[in-house]
Amino acid sequence: MNILLPTDFSENSKNAAAYAMEFFREVPCTLHLLHVIPAHAEKAGSGSAISQEIQEKFDKLLEHLEVIKTNQNHHFTISCKTNYLIEAVRQQVMEKNIDLILMGTKGSTNKEGVVIGKNTSDVMMKVKCPVLAISANAIYKEHKEILFPTDYKIQYNDKMLGTLRNLTSLSKASVKILELFNSEKEPSEEQIANRLFLQNCFSPKTPSLQTYYATKVPDTARLFVANKNVDMIVMVAKNLNICQKLLKNRQNNQIPFINQLPLLVLHG
Image 1 (cartoon, rainbow, N blue to C red):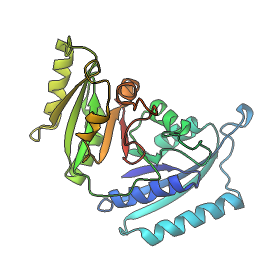
Image 2 (cartoon, helix red, strand yellow; image 1 turned 135 degrees about the vertical axis):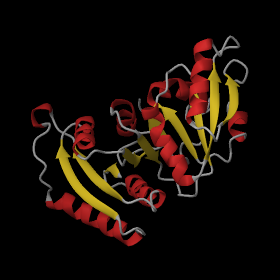
Image 3 (cartoon, one colour; image 1 turned 180 degrees about the vertical axis):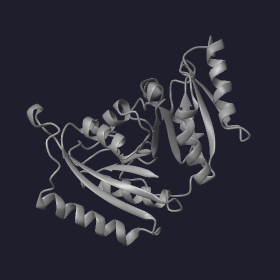
């Protein structure tokens, strides 16, 4: 398995790397560490030489990962690119045949209180590869329940759901689908068809359903009290905006629990 770990050497990205090694402790994999130096347009894509300062930071990170790794089939590569972040990540995804991007929810330059930093958000939305975002507060534990919010307004496919099925297989976790509807006129026939397809994808272990009407439950606090045992949130990139809107905490405009739970974003 090939996992891409973009890093700015912050504690958040360091924790994401440690989380990846623990989550995939039974899986042989190569973790590709990538540091991107922002570039002006005329320098974008130029060179990949690693300065002494950056090399020392890589060495310190690698030393830490070697100490904590428990699987001798976990291997590491490092690269440093002077480029736009998205272009550098896309290039690595293609060149390294990346299966999963795993990164911190925010880096060292993000303001206090920001839940998902701009870089992480951009990668989630613009790179066509599954992204697992880990916060600095996340501590690995066995996943037992995964929450999948959806409004069923997109068509799912096997490629999109493959990563989620693989992760549930590794962790033996169950999936709970949180149905997000805007009005009592929903679900439509199309939404019902998408619901059936989604459920069948996890057969024979059919996910449980929880229905949420935005017009009926103005306060999302009660909704998440019912999901206090959730260990991970999964969203489809095309569905991310509507999910963020419906699940935001009205007091602080943040997705509840996201400062503690891993967030997996899927692409079709």
